[in-house]
Amino acid sequence: MRLSYPTNVKIVRVPCSGRVNTIHLLKTIEEGADGVYVAGCLEGDCHFMEGNLRAKVRVEHARELIAQMGINPDRIRMYNMAASDGPRFAQVATEMTEHIRQLGPSPLYTGSGPEWPKQQDPKEQIEDNNPKPKAAAG
Amino acid sequence: MIIGDLKNTDEILDSIDDAKKVLVMGCRGCVTICQVGGEKEVALLASQLRIGDKARGRNREIIELTIERQCDAEFIEPILGKVKEVDKVLSLACGIGVQYVSDLGLPTPVVPGINTTFLGVNLDTGLWKERCQACGDCVLEITGGICPIARCSKSLLNGPCGGSADGKCEIDPDVECAWQLIHDRLKALGKLENIERVIPARSWATSRDGGPRTRIREDLRSISREEG
Image 1: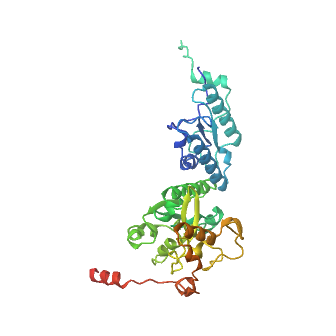
Image 2: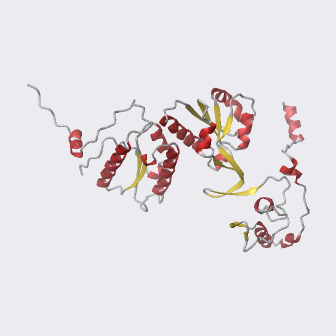
């Protein structure tokens, strides 16, 4: 499956979504991320019994904490997907990117980071990811 | 264990509004155990405050520090330098810790980040109940290990009252009648005769009614003077 997903999504790997703590989510926002989402396994399918359910509670807590500071809580989300479901992973990455794009840059954005990316057509993205070699001049 | 509750965020923000550098200070004692003022909670609150500041374009420094106990000089003295560096200390310790740090004679104001609620027990994750009011004259030996002062809504020494119904207290159907509990416990212990024992009116001077309490133990003080 040569699936593409927006390049702005940076993956932080954890052994289980239950490893994600509220402070990890807050730190991403504090350090300027426009949004963060936890991709956990489907509810009821956790190898460690309830890791994804714990993640869900922590995501909710982090949302409340940033909301109290006047940040849109929807910058933090939880998604559930099967580990083998590549298309769903790509779909969620696109959905979250579009959702965050609508919300605009983080109010914490200092201007020192990369430019706010322009909306890209998925087809263009594939081309961007696999640029064709340019013909040599001459 | 001393139980606490994090204060409302707006109240916390108000209390540190005039400070340009804030130390969020945790305590590894009771408030760590009841998950309100330990290292983790300090990190969360500090991060939350930084997020709020950055979002408002406010350039304020929030630093974090958690010490073993805020109610003991030996743990506070090594960090006095840090306290002097900041405009305000936001303490997540109980009221005792907040006062102890304030009493050190430093110019830095210390404000509470939590409300100290009661002396209680951790019954389950996230569930605490009051068990002691530190009244200074324990009757647990007579009442089968259940405190009528802390657990009876009226603090009756000779209960139950007429408000006890089906083992519950009249103030709230979720509150157990302490005297029903005492009765059942004494029965299980084979000491039901204790329920008929009249506990005479007591002096509350050992409790708060006698004003702020001081405890002096000459045996320890004399040793300390010898070593000192």
